[in-house]
Length: 391
Image 1: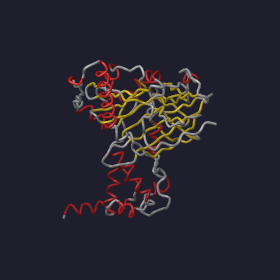
Image 2: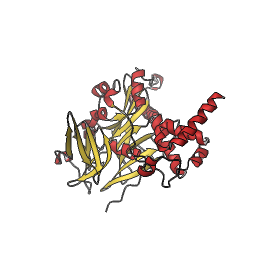
Image 3: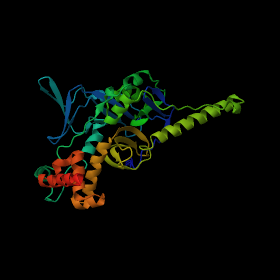
Image 4: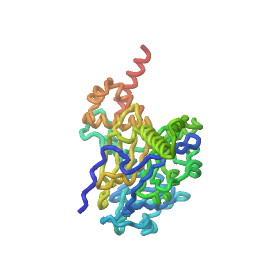
């Protein structure tokens, strides 16, 4: 029996090499190369082309969104190489619901085992569903401050908004004109030098097939704004000191050092993802591989990311896809995490954050969680705010 891959604690590009970036307008794409490919794990895209997808579990609605495609993971238990046609084994999936001009596909589970060693999962939506379901049940004790809706139904429903890749100015052109390296298996994607996402596949063939799928991913509103506001990236350049070059060997060594410096700097640009502490959850074990979803430790003033990964049992990263949370999304999950840590007691959570009870109530309302609280408590907090401003 193969050993099970341990849960991710940090994102480390083990087995991957960072290559010099390519720039188009405000878009910077940093190629990720894999020198040793085993071909015992492959990814294949399955297109849906419906207006929306409804993901259910045991007949209950769990998640609804626009899902342009799924990924089918194929693996071998003994390390033997695979051809990339696992996703063709199932021509269609799910029941199609048509209502007037719209259609929705009913899918069962975020990750579903199919015939043989094949697993279908919904990229990024797997991570987003985990993010939305954090602290979803609400208070365990019927505290008097909470609304009847929350006491009976929890936080249902929770929702977030994002933008598609085609809405980010320059991304489609960048993906069209950028060179794909022979051993490239992924990218670090920056918009105006802000890390938008990281994407890694098991093989270079898989990456070439999925290269333009970055357009079908969703991104935070901040990246859309950066694409509109900035037309270029910050100037960055490295050069070789000609005075130290006396031979081809010197030139080769200088270029190798320059590439190493580039890789180190571009890794530093993504340091709020790479090397950060994670909270991870195993979704599925596929032979020697583990499909996991994660969220970085929350910091209100820094970047925060959610994502999903496939990790080999020796710790090597075979698949990665991430989403950068907006500041508002971070605030929402941070406030919920503080409430949960304090047993959903408002006074304890307010004290922990250095707020008065009324200030904390107003923070919750501003973050979009006003429906958590009963009307009397909200009115009292608003009255407190008006009196404070009139002094």
